[in-house]
Length: 518
Image (tube, rainbow, N blue to C red; front, side):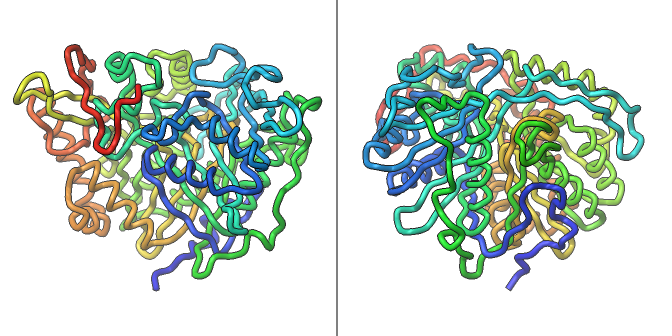
């Protein structure tokens, strides 16, 4: 049996929660898989459902073909006697797109309307200030000063009883917003990604396909996800105490036993200092684990990263040092994160302040590193032989490391960004299960490269060949995109410019097994 336990040196030692034995992890790739599982879990719950939300939409359809809105299901479960509670990020600007700012009692039907209603609290985020120094002297020390207006409670978690005496949790990065719902096909004409009431063609033109994952957890680590909810809910800055009560953990430890033949899991967080009384110094265990794992890599190691952002200097410095020691690093990144939004503008300013453009060449030009992005092409139904090309937005925040005799994976809501690693509220999980991580990576690479699982499994065991395969396909796909030809896969150089999605005149197809819902 392959080792299911990572060396103690990998785990975060300074965070709130230690690693736990005896857990089960299921990796759910993209919104269709994740939200169909979450919807089923909502319906199974008989006692409680607790949610932490950052971005979200009241009209979000978890399973578009069923026309069931998330809030409709939650109201239904509450009326059935389930205790439904949620803690929601209160953005500094109430008009922040795709958020649910504090509506005051009774403005969301069935929420904070007294006994028998969903109980919701809103939480304002903190800022952060302090000196930042290079771990390896790659840049001069500078002072970080992030105002609270840039803060975000960015966690996305769901915890509920499973209807059979147990408890289950979901931790990930996919927001309950229709544009974040997608399938592994990442079809640029899939109307299930368009919110109800919007023009389908315009909606698809405005929102590219999106890739992300969630983790379904059973076992003792669920208790840490639950404890995080209770801490955040009870410590929320807008508690609405006239219509809500403090949360008490609804289950005891015996309700969250170890899973037979389970694996070791650690729940990791970012929490800003002075946010909650029990952790006055905050929690930066996501970043600590990243640094621990990268520092353990070298010759014979393969590092695979997917992330929306790429500007935490400490982590980029450790990636450079790992490459210097001979590790091969493949990073799939968003080409233009949050382009055209206030959030994207703020992140760009932060990159510039942090001398990001001076440090990027450390890894971008390294022979052991390749920085890539995802795109997708499909036949254009208007013109035979033509293609519709689009970027695929990378919203996943995952790192897999295959060492010579160990494997570890981490993922969740935390970006490789100063914001996520230092003061945004985030949650990741980390675990070590070589068989499951290999199977997940092979499946994911098969989708990205449009290659067989047998080939991608073979590449995982040959870091040099894997690096070359990704580099070479990216070059060929970029040439095909330029020449108007159908690319062989979905991998492109990070700086690839994708054409605008002009979908005028297309009669949108109804997804297989579904019906037009937009």
